[in-house]
Image 1 (cartoon, rainbow, N blue to C red):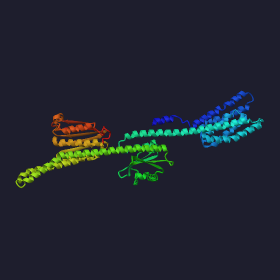
Image 2 (image 1 turned 120 degrees about the vertical axis):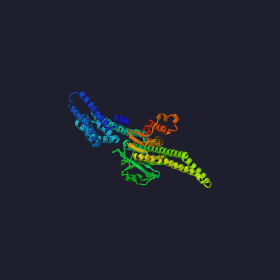
Image 3 (image 1 turned 180 degrees about the vertical axis):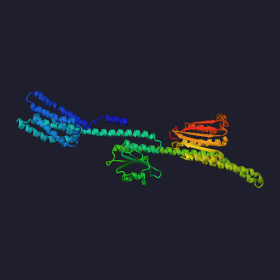
Image 4 (image 1 turned 45 degrees about the vertical axis):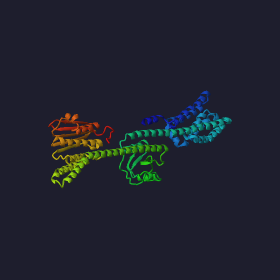
Amino acid sequence: MNLLAARTNQVENPGDPRLVFRLLILYRWLSLIPPLLFIISAGQNQERLAILLAISLLPNLLITFFSSQLNQWLTRRPWLLLADFLLVAACLGLSGGEQSPYYLYALSPLIAAGFFFQLRGAIVATTLFLPLYTAVLLSHVQLTNTPINWLTVIVNVTGFYLISGAFGYAAVLLHQLQHLSTHQQQANQNLAVLHSFTAALHQSADVEAVQEVVLRAVTTELGFGRALIGLADEQGQMTGWLQCSRQANQMAPGTVPYTATLSLADFQAGGAANQLGQLFEMAHCLPVPLLWGIQPIGLLLVETAPEGVDATRRRSLEALARQTAVAISMMQTRLRRAKETAVQAERARIALEMHDTLSQSLFGIVFTLDGAEKLLDRDPTAIRSELLWARETAESARQEIRRAIHDLWSEEITPEAFQSDLNQYATDVLQANTLALQFDIRGSFDTLSPRACRSLYRMTQECLTNIVHHAAATEARVCVDVENGRARLVVRDNGRGFEPDIALAQEHGQEHFGLRGMQNRAYSLGGTCDIFSQPEAGTSIVIDIPTAWPGNGTGK
């Protein structure tokens, strides 16, 4: 788009008044050639004509060196042409009347009137010049006692109207061409804006980023002073307003005091612009609904000039609104489907764990109690061991329920919650009462994608489980360091240790599935998982993963 604008600026507008004025200057100089040739060919006794030619050069020099100022003055004060009319009339009267070699020079103010004031101005200027021309001819007759050649006069007057009218009509055509060119440039600019806007939409990570792209396109590219965008919630109310102004070019979320309860249908009704203008302190505004089919997605509101918005910019706004509605709707659909998929996956996981653990335990308890009830009257002492087994199984089921509760994931987790949840997991679920557990957590969890944070939590859980169940350790330390786009997890213990190569060998895969699972999880995130251990020398597990998932940059 910038390249297109640069090329457009390099081409001068053919209807530019400055270029027209240069053409008029050139014509004025060339129109003095006939008087010069006449003086040269006439020979002697032409001092008066030479002085007249010299006088004619003075306004040409002024116009040449002060063209910009004269251009502006003539546009604002058309009556300045009267001075030029008097000059050319004097040249005609003192150099031969209707036979004057200054005829072409006399056309210059009429041509200027046509260029600057178009066809009507050319006709009016020529008509005003005719009485002055007639007076000059009559004065010439009185001074020279020569009759007037009326045929020549008629030809000259006809030439005045034809030439000035032709240039006036040409000025009309140039003005129309300039108007069409302006519209074409605006259309090209709007197409470039829509192209860059569409490309930016595809790079947006969330709905708020889409809103920011829209507002910057409206204020920066389309040139509106201020714009706001709000999204419709499930109740049909406009919420989540975001605004941007061209002067500040900064997003201002949460600063718009919007408490009205108008629906999108109310926005489209009569008088909606006035209500919104009062609400957001806009003297003039244009509401543009964001629609996905007939489904309201939100509302785009732009501040306009008092005269409103031209048709071209309005069409650009509507096209931009349609693109925005499609992008936001598709993003919301993907997020909704992702959440539904995550919920279904979590339900399936919980159902599978309950089937494999709780269901079997509860079935065994019921079966044991049923058998105990039958032996209660015949041999009460025989059911003691069965009841003890049922109690142990019920306690195991209770622990499984706690484990399932701890496995439920929160969308946001802070370093404090990370440490607290793992401490509680070690105490309540693993019952590691004799394990001295220390934490060292540094960096900001805000830079962690949800998947990376969840994976760190799960892998730490697995490390603690292995320490409690297999390492017989008395001390363990968990270190988490989030910095420069990487997250590093180090878990150390002073337990009995093991041979990592042997533990990860194929024949030991079932016994040490947790270690292999941690490595696979780290690899899937684009990271590494290194295990350092020796018998009777403790174990260190070092995991390094990126804070954002390489698959899509968000980790969601």
